[in-house]
Amino acid sequence: MIVWLISLRAISTLKTCQHPDGGFGGGHGQIAHLAPTYAAVNTLALFGGEDAFDVIDREKLYSWMLSLKQEDGGFLMHHGGEEDARYPDSFESN
Image (cartoon, rainbow, N blue to C red):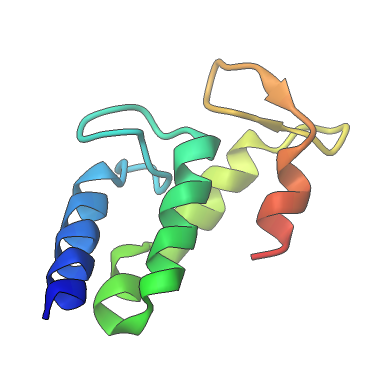
C-alpha cells in the first residue's frame, strides 16, 4: 500500500513538471531541461504501468529533443542553454 501511494504521488508530481514543449522541468512551471527530463523519464519507467507511461507525451518529447540537437552531435541542455556532449548517449539508451 505504501509503495503504491509513493508511486501515485511521484507520477502526479512529475505530471506537473512536464513542459508544454514536451520536456520536463525541475519543478512545476520551470523550463524544460535535459537533466530533469532524463530523471523524469527514468523515474516513470521504473514505476512502469499505464499511469506512468501516459504522463510522457512521446511526440512532443521527441520533437523537443530534436530541437535541442546540434550539428556536432551534442545537445543543448535547454533552449538558449549550454551544449553538453554527454547526454546523447544517455538519451539514446532509453
